[in-house]
Image (cartoon, rainbow, N blue to C red; front, top):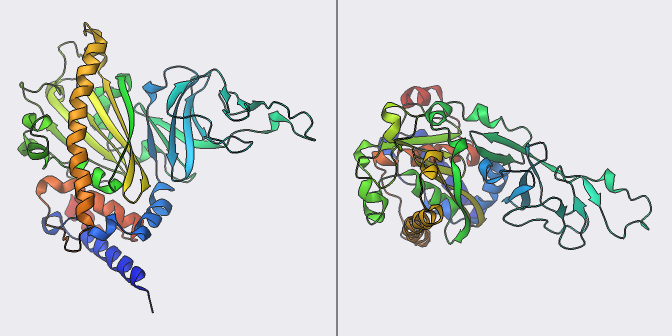
Length: 394
């Protein structure tokens, strides 16, 4: 006879499949157990984070050989580094000696030296130095190399995966390319990169990013004042690897419109913002003058590592009389936005613990939450879209 936890897991996954199969018009939020059950977290590690692509950050944050960004996929520390040949590669962030972590955060170096015993690696991962190892029979540094992590760069983003059979990023995001390519975001200039830990489930933060329904309320002191939610647009097609929406900014917006010196964008692109979520946990706001992004990694059921970054269009940076002052003002603004979101998503995590918590019906503005539900149902519950579903979605 199945135990109680197993029965609850089966019921949660059955509800997830039913939501995926249904229409947005009849959809509700996902069941509370999806955000709090240890069995769900174990499934996510195996079926989502071990299989899909994850965003380390911007390639522009690795401007020269030796620059690196650390990250993690489940329990595997990794880092991405630009080599002497200009290519960005990913490696296991674990020394081949006593398994010390090699690098933390963001930085640059001419060689990688382990902070424990100074085993030293070339930028391509080759072991080139191991002090006091000459008396170890048969040990040859040249026979050792940090394990490579599959790494791809797409439109200026660095993605990594542990899955050697995952389709290429460019293939998965082919339908997104026409929406973002005109902005040439690979040339945007990074001005901030921060890592935080928030006390919430990663899916609650992902869902919060996806919908503009909360903006006039939760962000009324910041971005909500400029957000005409009725202007939100969703593509007719749905895609397995991402979801996206667009919206426009009027002349009163502090950010979000093309600078007069912008010669890349024409027509509506000059005041349109594209907001993709690349499943499972990379999301960004791409505007004519700036972009900002989140890349999430679960730390536990109720904690999530949040990588937050901001970049500015090159023509915007070029005319700034005082870049450091402008950066400080911009980060102060985004600190306020993030504080508003953190209050909400940490409150949501407290709410899903409640015995009487019940998911409510979704608004049309929450279309992407239904897309996310379908993604999760496919990964966790074995749901597959039928031809009827595809016809209905289009």
